Length: 284
Image 1 (cartoon, rainbow, N blue to C red):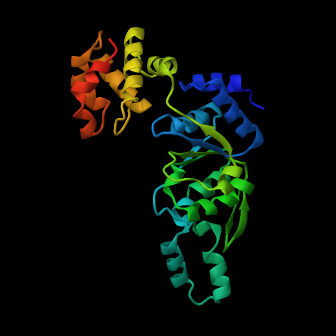
Image 2: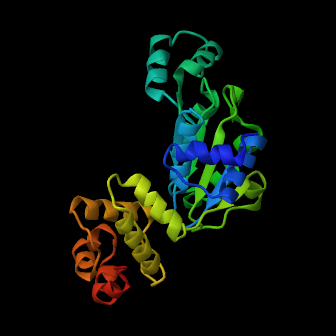
Image 3: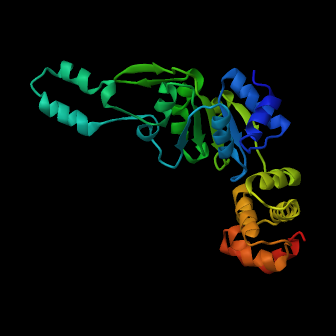
């Protein structure tokens, strides 16, 4: 079993910070070879964890971005209909049994992320991102893969994983995921980091930023997230703002600087209209 402290150090080497409890959950998922289900607000680093794991494990990252209406043909596989049709036209005199066996062979199979992850020549990290965006039917379709690491294609039969992928599922909890899926996973809830960890993230991700400015940025963002904004700043937006301030040569964060650069941090008109009120939260 990859020990949590070893995993923490490996991820820190890739500039990703986990606390002890989070590292333990990831280690358990790796040890048991179970999918890791990560829930939490948008922008807390769920997707970035999968990317950092890919680097730490030296495993290719295969990403399935979920969206409403996603179907098997975009997630699992698709037949190359154009090539199949050309083959049928070229060999149309053959008996159908012989012809169909040929056109429904693997050379006409177009791999999509799920199939690619289990046919990978080496263990891969499969990221199924924002799973809550798809419907219950697609979620149920995933259960065979998550339980047995195999996929059934009617024309070819069952394809088992050459190497079990490390599966990371993320959800922003816009829809409640089913119990059948949850039973198959190790669960991790990720929230926004505390002040000290966010400051450390800023220092790692924004080259050349002063410790004092990083502290002030982190403290200001922490306060902004308590104000009921339409879109509270995510970690990536915090980093963008910190990078802008650093590039401008800002030494001291104040209300005027906050107003001038707020577009890098606040992404809704309703939030920007509250600038006069919010500037009092700036950590000087």
